[in-house]
Amino acid sequence: MKKLVLCFIVLFLSLNLNAQNLSVFVASSASKAMEEVKNEFLKSHPNDNIDLVFGA
Image (cartoon, rainbow, N blue to C red):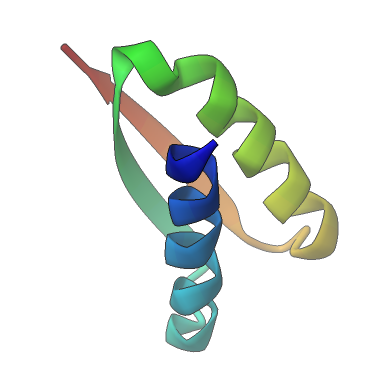
């Protein structure tokens, strides 16, 4: 749960960047949680694109 909250904080802080393409590097163990975070973020920011890069 703490990781999910931290991910939301990071995403909301990136709002000020006004980037349309954002790459987020994520541990593979958090892939499902980050997919959910990504989908929720894109609902309110449909013009942005988030590329999730999964690692070991």
